[in-house]
Length: 271
Length: 171
Image 1: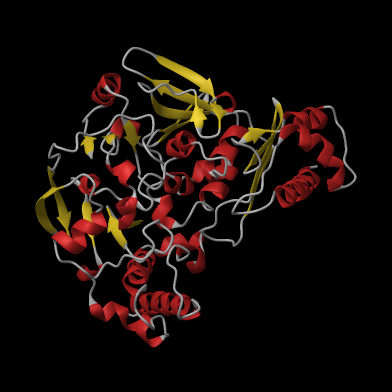
Image 2: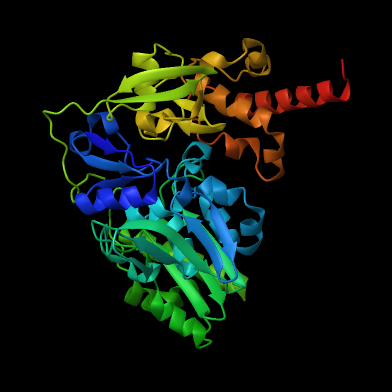
């Protein structure tokens, strides 16, 4: 196993241009069961953890910028985020516990591309934009266009996610619901982030499709002012948007029903 | 996740690197294999076996140490990332600070205890955390299959109370 240790972002991008290395940030996903993971141990990595220029959370007129090394704990301890983007804090507090929150990064959660991610749904509901850089160029991709399938993204091998940006839209509604087998330290059976801003409703679901997904049929109905008398009334719309499966954590039927119910309650509370 | 789209290291080449970091207040210099975790270096290279390995997946918290003042699972930290950091392990703890935990039944078999103590002392050192969090939430990353957690939570609360009393009556 080989790990490159660049001292600057430019050096890191040069490493990535030379070879398709695996970017390593807080390690909370990559190092799981590390001693027995022979394939991972044969890999070639680029360690980002020393790149202070990627650390921290910045605010400007356009909104919030989470540097690629901004952790969940950074967001939890930020009083302005607590006030302006409370769902970021709600989701962050449900990612493992302090030991994970202190190392896990928002950008790492985005790139890891798990359909059961907790950070991704809230970022997507807030219209996050992923900032990618390579040695030769920089580009921005809306998070809802970042995933191409199960654990695949539009990131090219020479690119690094350097930041995640959130526009300032004054989201009047922000709700995050995670359904797991227990309150702490669980992986989501169903995740839901709901937001409403001047741009309209955002309904984002986790663990019910190959990627975290926006439920655009439901969003359109909410934007049109449709009302739903019962959770079951949401099911025909949700079936257009999500494709849950049976797996080790839950069943398709349970996920669909629970998503409809938590969504219905979240909408009712927001009204 | 496997580096399926990544490039591979040459198995015939030695990729060991030298790192320096502060461990329990003292400078440490050591050559490490990049595949070693901080936990491995602490236990098997430096002989600090107080830090335990439980699940190896960031769930149980038995391997909790502090890096730059924050609790982390040392099973999920590549040793090379300790470079330049300040690491504190259970070996640095003043045994007298454990009294409230012992008296409240916060420990039974002891497997989780070093990790529990590292998180508990972090809470005691930062009582302002309790303005936004409960002790139970802050301790959620330390699994214990003996105590049922009540003893642990009570121990932390009693220690916090004792700290406040000491502050009220300066010696």
